[in-house]
Length: 450
Image 1 (cartoon, rainbow, N blue to C red):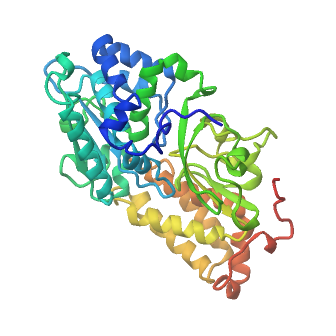
Image 2: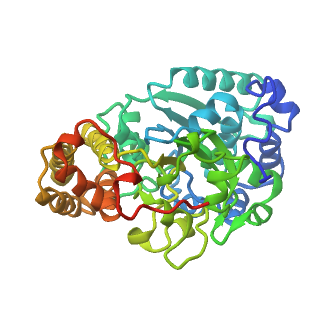
């Protein structure tokens, strides 16, 4: 059984309350940093841990903190990105729902390290239950003396506020989030300047994901070097994975990075294998924005080695034969699932969520949705497949924020690995309206992996 750092006590009755959280060792990290450590020492521990951003990009957290400008007389801010809008990803919601004090404690530790005295948790507007849970946790922490003025007689002051978002996927991008937090339309900003220089209200700001901030607690409690011993290569520590799709045991799992993908899918400790005795067809490993991979490439790299749940192993081979760990939104598709219909569904989402600021994204996402719908509904032409590839290439790398890339990658990878399925739809338009297309449709189906 893999080691757990964030979800150790997740099933403990009352763990959402301060009383039970404290009984299980909660807020020891706050006491440690305020009584024994300087802010720079906290940053150094996070650097030693090798913690990488758990929201998708995987940028080293301690390095990101060290970029924060510290001009005299100018406030600094920590903003927690709780706008979990990536399709297939729900682990931050799970953490905020069941153990909110893990996030609050992480906010205090991180704010102290950054010299921030006002911090915000920006939560997707539809998550009203989680917003209320966090607000209650903040009230409990303040009543216990962990927030407010002169915390634990340390001279450090901190207030944390929860801000509901407007329900826009684009606000998961950190500069669009800051615009929304300032009361503006959530459009991404042109960079530079980066938030570390000019972020919230034009002041130095760090934006981190819920899981990233919560992970600072075990790092401080156990030490950065101990945390770095967990995992593999530059993928250190544990990672929360949102597992869904055609598996027996959907849910949120905490894994040690480096776990074999095949073990994650088939072990009873995790996904429990494919539901209804079906075969695995494909996987989206890190949320809807990452390239989809067929079964043979999600369990084995192109070089023939076992694929691991880590940043390096999943990306091995680039986008030709690899993908990304991303936000950890792990969606498994069985042999009966239609890749064309799934890709169209993703394209609909990204077209709807594009802010419209960049022409390639605004126009290109619309084109991809329309062409995919044309193929799915039985009216496609062979030339439409190459048209989709061309549009995806024109979007990728040509937008202010990564939403354009997020829209292009699923389409390009689906065609790269399942082009025959797209062709089958076009060649059998009557059937395309009424049937799903599993492995049985192909002359050379993927072999079962176990």
